[in-house]
Structures are given as structure tokens and as C-alpha cells.
Image (cartoon, rainbow, N blue to C red; front, side):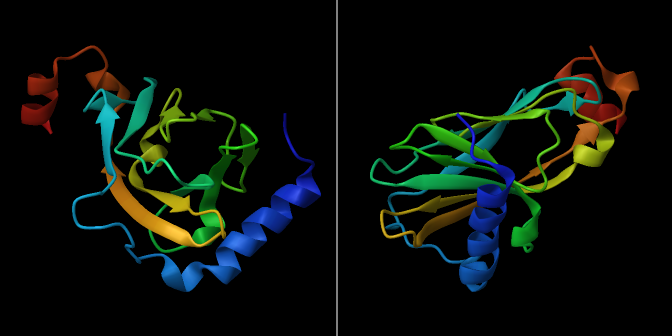
Length: 155
């Protein structure tokens, strides 16, 4: 199920303007925090990578993925858990899939996909619960099929 484009724009407008100042907030207790990791840990242009979210809070309403760390205008996708509904954002290229567990799959990555990715969680009142960032580096296509150790030493 997917909302129409006007609803998509309204949701991303709300996120970008209502909560932009909260981008770097952290509301979880010190023992509860989300971690992100890429699977596989090293990826070359043309490969797929999963940005795996670990330790997602259970009582959230929704979560959203963004490209970058400071601009909410680069929303990739938002997922509302209770409705099992995914809404794409302005930075969605058609190669991204968001999963209910909070993870994001990037298919056929390019070097332009390198950079920071941000995951935000929202509570039942629509307030930001957490913001977590990770940096993804996409190696040139010449590194496809090389072992992780060889990629690390060659770059």
C-alpha cells in the first residue's frame, strides 16, 4: 500500500520543518540505543548492501531514513509500524527498500551512494525518540568480488 504523492509531500514537509531542530536529539536511556551496521561491511559499486538496525525500540509509531545528517529534505522512506505502511520520500531513487525491523536495503549501489545515512524513530505522539547516523563507503566497481581484507588494504 502506498499514499498518493500529495500525502507523501505533506508527511515529509511535517518531518522536515516540525522536527528539524531535533535532528541531533537522543531520548533513549543510556542502556537503550540503536546501532546501525552495513551488511556486508564493505560494498563495491553494483552490489547490494543492507543498513541493519539493531536494538530498535518496541514502542515506536514509525521510523524514517534520510540521506545525510543535517538535512531533513533528503528523506528516503518512512515506515509506520501499526499500519504496516511504507511511504517514500524525495530522496528515494527506487533502489531502496525499508523493512519493518528498521533496516534499509540499498540495491545496485554506486559511489554516489557513499555518505551518511540517518535513522530516526518517532513515538506515538509523533515526537522524535532517537536519531542514529552511520557512514557508508562504496568502493569503485573494480573492487567487486575482492575479499574484505584486500579492499581495506588497497584503498
